[in-house]
Image (cartoon, rainbow, N blue to C red; front, side):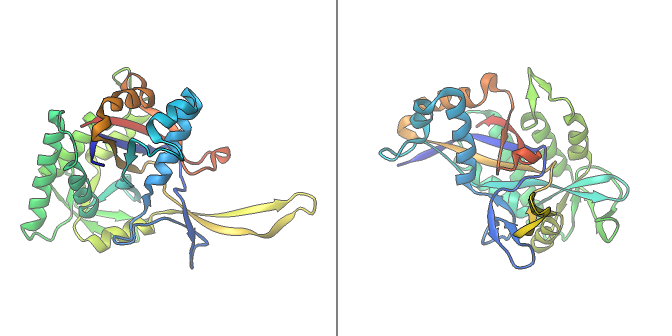
Amino acid sequence: MYYVMSALIFLWTESDFYPGGGRGTIVDLEIQRDTVTGLPIVRASSIKGAIRSYIELKYGSDEAKKFFGSAEKSGRIIFSDGNILFFPVNEINNFFVYLTGYPVLENLSLLLNYAERKNPNTKDLMNILESIMRNRSSGTNRNYSSSDIDNSLLIFDGTEKIGCQYNEDLKKFVAWIKKWGSPKISNSLVPGYGYLLEHLVNKTILIHNDAHFRELVNRGLTRVVRIGIDYERKVVREGHLFTQELIPRYTVLYFGCFVAFKYKNIIDDFLCDLFPNKESIVLNFGGDESIGRGVIRMVLFET
């Protein structure tokens, strides 16, 4: 069956979250990673599960089956994996800065090849990304910044120094995200997001070296100690003391929403159900909602 990408959806993390994973060696409960790049991802199955639960809870099981199918019938809506687009790391002079890398930008560019391109802003984004990739192929071995911030940043509490140079194409890219991919309600920015967008526009760094970008992202993940208490004995239950990785709040991710070509007529119903009035919505991903984790704001961009 042939599918076409009808929407690009951005995930703005409002709290740390665990996208799924498994047992690790250094960290007991690691997050899932792309087996090729080594970067954290959100599997399409996790995205589908969260969205299906939302549709089912709000509109009923019949509506969910119409889009996602059942044991007897395949679904008509599918999703790509969720990839990191902007990753926050602390910085001595700027509180925090956003990092991005060529692997995630190239993946976004490839994903857009499947877009319907009915929206002229899709083509604008593709052209910006193409220009950014040309900068890399020109042979300049530099990190780029989205503004004239200090060309020597001190991240991870000053333990690592990163040099960067202003780049106009990166500035255009973050400006596009601000305009078309930021959380809005009634055409106004969601309260509290002005601060994040100021960092995005003025304090985003494109890391030239792919391995360095991967190292910085994996180093910047939140790591916590989890325990389970035996309340009768007032001690930690056996096997319930462990460490866990989390994707930190303020991270921005993206994924594609695809519809089977022969069922294109249902995509409007689906997107209207998921994004009433095309406004951003909040879902919970990865569980742990009882302790405030996994709060994600989703933003729709129709391609």
